[in-house]
Length: 193
Image (cartoon, rainbow, N blue to C red; front, side, top):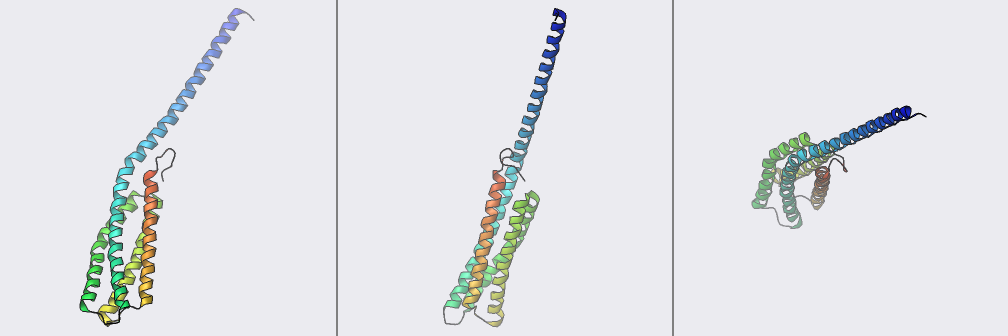
């Protein structure tokens, strides 16, 4: 092989090697940029989601607490043999009125959850809202029995309310777990929804 051909061949191999290295470096940089953009996106949406999730859980907890206290009042009424007093009925009514007053705040924060997402958190919020609604309906039925017909709830009815309370609490915990996963996603090792 003559020296001229060897020089041209060497230059061609060098150019191809340099070009290949440049392409490889560009692809790696592109991949790194995508990861950085994804991580930045997750960081930007994390805080607004967290604020929304916390507000929603606080209102849901407040509703659950009011209704749980009403269940305790019903249990007390069902457990004693004397008739119900007007004060007992008024206490349950006041608790139910607090539930009604808090409901619009709950609905507002639930709407924010629908906007913020992701789908897994939306689904958990829908389930929680449904379980709290079932719980509220049971409380309302027993309250109507008290106010309209002066019927003290039977232990079985109070037990049904306790089960509704437990179902709502489980849905509350499921929402917390789902929200925690969504907030903990980093977009790199843990994908976002």
